[in-house]
Image 1 (cartoon, rainbow, N blue to C red):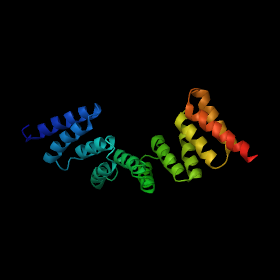
Image 2 (cartoon, one colour; image 1 turned 45 degrees about the vertical axis):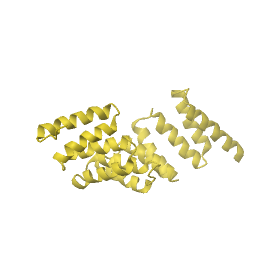
Image 3 (cartoon, helix red, strand yellow; image 1 turned 90 degrees about the vertical axis):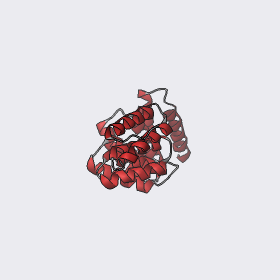
Image 4 (cartoon, rainbow, N blue to C red; image 1 turned 60 degrees about the vertical axis):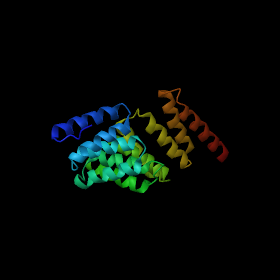
Length: 199
């Protein structure tokens, strides 16, 4: 393939890369993004889209380095902050404190964003900071009372604190909306066992 030499080529390379990305063909997508980046090394959109493909390929360290390039040029890039936080919080990287900083910066840009608050809550819970996690989940549930995942995760945080009756009530709420939800069912059983053991 001849190397493209003009901006139009960059756009067509980018477009092809995005199409491959949507098909889940990340390695091929990255090769198109790389060709376009060779022509326009400071095109933040290209760098961001390459980071997305790296993240989707579970190459989190590489993805973070590209999100950092984007954030150096655009410190208020909300999506780059959130995705960098997602990479850092992944068990493969396990840099959860740094992930929290990303989520907090994103929340300064878009206060009370339910998606970011949920991510922050999950991360706080995994760090054993259950009360702070519950505060995040509460704000999300005020906005979206029917969010099953957040309902279940609030139940888990309550169970971690030994507040089993409250936890069970949240698992019950999730099961009312989704009777087949095995996670809610199993965690409810666990919470009941722990509560009964404490009596």
